[in-house]
Length: 467
View 1: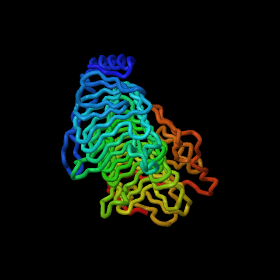
View 2: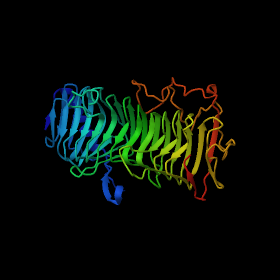
View 3: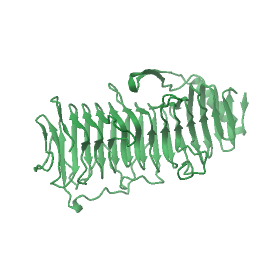
């Protein structure tokens, strides 16, 4: 069966079906140990041998090739209500894709899709749905919303979903593939993942393999309520608030893997969760507040924690703590370099509970006055708490910045050039670069000197309290 609103869509859809039938497919399964120790099987689904249905979006409608079952087209709105593999391509300035509540086993293959929505989310995964969104190998895909997609600033808009990709309560969504997906969020968030509830089931958001670029000029790049796993791939993020945000549990990387490459070029806070674990990856952060934060003001008596057991982290903040935990902070592996803000109450490492460095290599720099407290970790224990005097100078072979507190270049990362705030018109692409009109501030001109506290941690299980 073939139906189309124009003849050009018919040609495009036929070509896409031919291409995807030639593509060899692998379906992989990973066992993921989820919160609470429950082992579940999740499908990564990079591609398939044959798509059941191909949709080509245009401004005048949606051309369809393949099965007539499992979906409904209404103008430029596609609603999917049955399991299957669906190929999405084309360009549309006001269209959307919706996965109906309770629909599982859905795979959306994005193959050169450019989809903008005027008042809602370009893709919505409704409650209790299970969806895999694949960026096809070698393709570039762009999803964009508008300012109207925000029910706080546009209370009369009943279609607002507050995200470019909206994953509602109880939905399990995976983003993967060997292609590129760019999200331009002008409403609120880039991606919003919902909560786990007794009625709707467990919610989760998993990211692996693909290149994901997000520009969020209003709120968070990614905001999850229950569980966020960033396993692999490349993430380039610029946001007005938090780059990676989860109300409960966030896992980045996995032991024995290279993990993801995450470049946060502009943000208020870098990565925030109630319980944050970083096991592998290459992470660079430039922000104006805390680089890593374990917090959630809505949770009482929670064991907030930051646990770093692997990977490389280079973090720089202009006016916040480097790593800030409302509970414990543990570094047991990896390579960590942190520069904190120049205010007197900002530290490279800050925790309400215990700070423990039992492995890895950590270097900490503070843009501070010479009388501010500092802390060093090493084989001899902990020193420099309170205003105990003494200059940290250089520890572990690491030198502080020589330009009045500027970080210079860390691992090829340059700090943003506009005060850490994203431009409203900034775009993120595969060649992601921070904007170039910013100066973090001349620390020397404010009579602030740069001091450094560095930890070369061994196996002595050194630990201490936050200062």
